[in-house]
Image 1 (cartoon, rainbow, N blue to C red):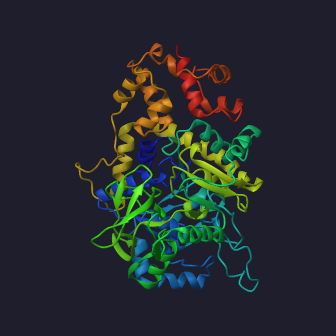
Image 2 (cartoon, rainbow, N blue to C red):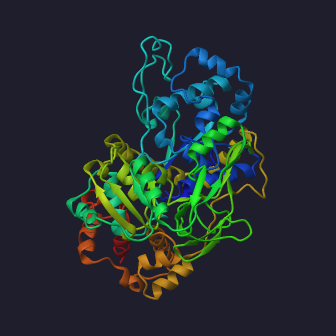
Image 3 (cartoon, rainbow, N blue to C red):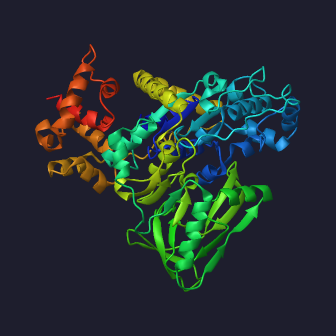
Length: 570
């Protein structure tokens, strides 16, 4: 599913689960929907399952928003106390849409408690008290941490969301409310981070815990005993990160300069921001220090994950000047991390958007896109750690691997099984909406905005993801004999997007197959893919990709099949 298709579904008011591989644009789609709601006078609650994730989206934790706090269990008395909290009741009742990012780290138990709280406060037995709830995330990321024991003297009064008080599933999708909430899956398929097809095949195999001997050999060939360059190092344990950063900073000549975080707002929220902010409370730097930016620049000068080096101090205020790996010099300014409610900042911390980048934990790297990294997975202890670390990279060329163990190549088996369901569900939802008349979807959109108290303004009624007319540019590069990967890199698009351009250009008669013969895959890919696609042809003549892919080994991607399918039209 594309981002635009997902946005259209969100606008109908349905409960939605947005997922997809890292780099597929989940956060971008959420931000587009938030902008759409605000254009209609609506203020959604933007939350996340963890403090780190909350800072990425300038929101707050769902625990704070709901009044749940650090609790992972509630009694009826707890519910009564929450209902007496006037500020909480006001906040929850006037919220039209609840967004929860990084849902993979929210347990099924907590999702049930959230449903219980919202139903009680909004005085409605509809799921989540009638709120539209948007869940976003990738369950192949690090899983939730849950308490596994209930004190015997409390168990009779504990509510876990179901009437009997029994434990619910470990993952959010295992909670009964996932079904009763009727979440529609939007599985984003385009890839905006990686364009390396071999690397994409590796990540795809990791998602299924099915790394072949060939792909394992591919990782083995990336093993190094010592690293080169200034790429960040990702470790599974904090002790390794602190050790490397301290050692590397100490090696540099010159004096240390310290930059201290400033704070404002409610103390407990400030403390939450301090703990979750990727920039440290006290930032110690020297000339020559390897750094990584920890926030996106509003002006587009850098993004969360841009790497660089301190090359000078600004004369006016002594702040660092960073030279990025691309050679750009950036004069740094402090930036804010905030917790907002109804568009107002409840707390904020201000710091330079930097941290030392010789080493990071895998956990802290979530949400980043890195050009290169040194990664040590030899002590991986949790499902998904290897996948999270490797999927931060844009290409395999940027990987220097210090080690890996068997655990690092595994994702949770329950997640692997569920992912197949998500893919199939998303496909059926996409088709269902494609079959609906445009007028019907537009009516649903307008009715939802009115129902939750928004306004309909013809000038702002259509808030969609920015459309870019790029087909002519892609066509010119194709006719110039460029490869798909080369075009994707030059235009800073994904291989999947370029193939989408090809499909539309050929379908519209703007390109002929004779003009793209240089793009035909090699025979070792073309022959088996062609045979699998022809076997998967439906009675109506439609060539289906998913059945074909299941017939092939792990080295084949959907992009391979889409490209081969084009040549079957000849």
